[in-house]
Image (cartoon, rainbow, N blue to C red):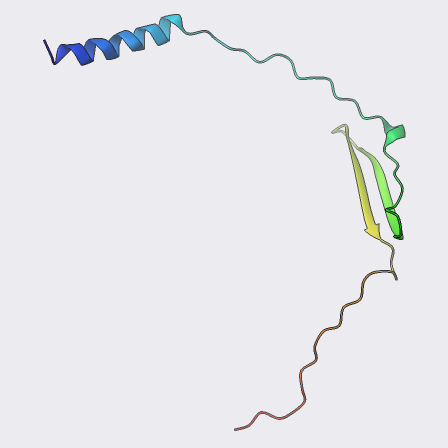
Length: 88
């Protein structure tokens, strides 16, 4: 009898899950809209940037891209290797 009790309990839980479970269905996706008039944007204060915006064809998604204007990028100096010959 003690061996049958866990099996009966497991079988009961399985039957309850199969017969008593609720089916959950997702609703329709929301309707997304891109307002093209709201896509243009200004550069960050104190910066000079080139900005691009628009609607990606076919996908119906808006995009905004901002990049530094050529000539105003931050310069960095790279260390140069010394011209001393290697010792042998």
